[in-house]
Image 1 (tube, rainbow, N blue to C red):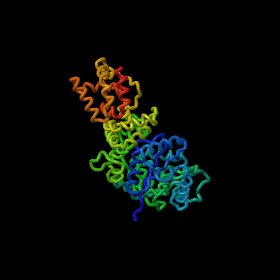
Image 2: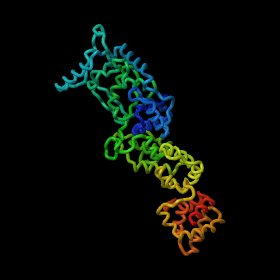
Image 3: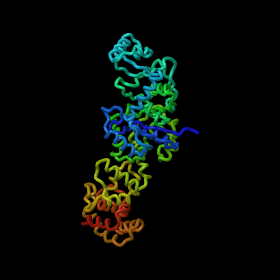
Image 4: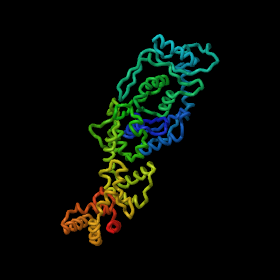
Length: 466
């Protein structure tokens, strides 16, 4: 029986969920969910000087917005410090680690001398094989005994086999002189204890894998499957940074991108399934595999993101879309919809969502249903409401009082009115748009009449005519 897949996302709490981190979390989530496995979340909060609960909350909120649910409780790395130290002491007792009494000054002077002589600055501690009887009563760190010959092979599902000569590995510190465990030890112990089978993370961690494998091997633990994914670059080919725009997942929520579109776009950043650009969550879970991840960095492209988001808005369920728009308004600090506005928006979705790429665009098109009487026309719309146009509305409004309020009847009535006045419907559309929405560019006149309903439509026409 094959071992169930367990992946994890392990961010440092820096104040927001970085878009690169969001993609790493997504890849780990898709890989586990597509195989009936577990996706775990660990906050790497060992750096207490930089840690704040708000930063952790920001990560959790970003993941909640993206819909990346995790199994079990959130693991705090800091709270496991005693367990990490216990493993270091176990290695010490087994002779696989040793106490090093070298001072910072001694290490620095060794490196300076090595540099001056053109030798490797990799520190070789004189305490590695020292007789414990010679140990002084002084502070020490615990170092692992690195292999000194041969090579370490990182078998990586994305990068292929990466070979590192063991003469490039130093005797890494496991416990500092105050007894606190280092990050590299904590990661390995946590991944082992959490049963993680696949470590999917940025390729900036690739070199760490060889050093972490020393701990796995010394403890006799199974090494997880590695998958080091390329970083995300901006359009200029440089590492994604503030100058390229928003970096936090929640910034994209506040800009009005739908979560489904963001998931789809992030999945396509560095991974592909044939030529498929647009796909559902169910398809992504079924298709996603480590073999589809490319080695080269992916480029973040806002236009592509908008195009995919537009396709997701177009096929979304109307009630779900309304809910997500209400969450967007809250995230963006914009006024909430009244229940009447929300109901109207949901009714109007069918004629709004086909061409909107973001929620602000959709809400802009929805202005006719969100506005309340009296409708004040903007400058362009006001030009469509001259005396002649008002005369047309004064004559037209009573004729609409008694028609059946459905598309076919309304089209017949308005086209008939235009024909009777020896003009085309297009000439009527401008004044009707201005009266119903206060704008020159709107959804179709018939859609607005149907969404607003008879009473509201006639009241707006009457207002404009007067």
